[in-house]
Image 1: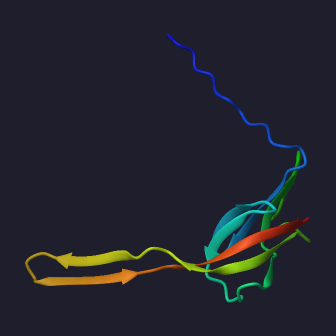
Image 2: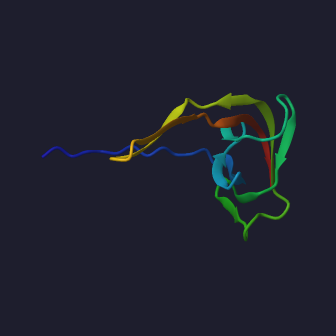
Length: 118
């Protein structure tokens, strides 16, 4: 029987990341990341600050908030607004001649993470 080997990636010791909350969802972010969050009211090219930081980790040091980390924030630039592909919602009830077809496209804001302040 052949023995399988798994490779484990070692992360850099100075790697900093954070878990932030936006729109009721949690995102794992690091400086330089570009993420899509639910639509924000900020214009493209503007800078935003996210103060709902749930966790900050730098190397082996980890700060966990209760529920948020005091004084921690994430700064980011708004890249643009994007729309997801259309999904079709089809409702149908048999034997009653009832059917409805509608579509939905979700709008997201693409943001580029600049820095994490802890």
